[in-house]
Image (cartoon, rainbow, N blue to C red; front, top):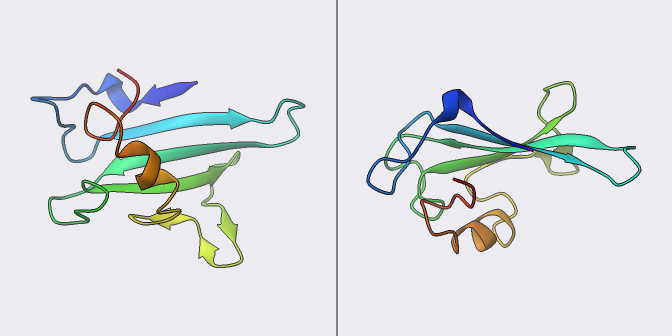
Length: 96
């Protein structure tokens, strides 16, 4: 399930500042449920992520943490979030 806040669409191939996109992830046996998301930040936030901030939320909406602290930022899982999303055709977004 992918959610675009207020159904946001790109303009000229880029999403505007403030765009929020969430994806609900569940394990096959439904024992774990979390949301991964991205928010388009202001220009200059991070060239590496095309100004997207990545994050992971628990099912209750709180920021998920691991041994390094809250899972959020422009370069978290650099080889994962940025590494995969850089191949998306539209502004690092695979859907829409």
